[in-house]
Amino acid sequence: MTHPRVPTLLLALALAATLTNVALAHGGETGPADAADLAGQAIAYLQADPPNTSMASDRINDALTAEQAPTDVNLELVKAAGIALKQGALPQTVQLLDAALGKPGQTLGPIVTVRVGAGYYLAFAVAALLIGLGAYGLGRRGGHERRRPSTPANATNAHE
Image 1: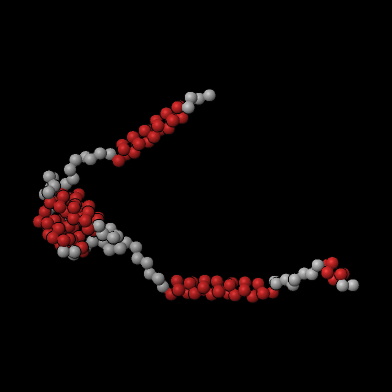
Image 2: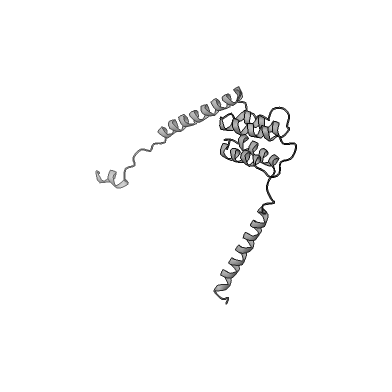
């Protein structure tokens, strides 16, 4: 017979090992992020659906005050992106951040587009028709299956 504390002790050890592995998997901070990383994160927050403007604003402000600013990041354009974000111009903010990072051209649009054509509507109409016909058929069939009330066998013999 095992001691009543042994299962509790094993559970506590398993939990501690699991939490330690989770903490190690997430890792710690590797130091302050540079301006390019922060500007890239701001772009990601703005291109999310829905855009997270408060986090993007935080990342832009952090990029402006970052200790490590690579020479290929134009901080003046990052500053202009912050102003554009405060004015609510999200597409222009993304374009300014892209330009600050040295990325040419426009940002990507939607990666997947879905077009609903006539075939979709035809399939929907056929499905609705089949469901309607099935319901009609069940209604008609239900009327023919009604049973006549049965009379007890002794009731007919009682009158004789």
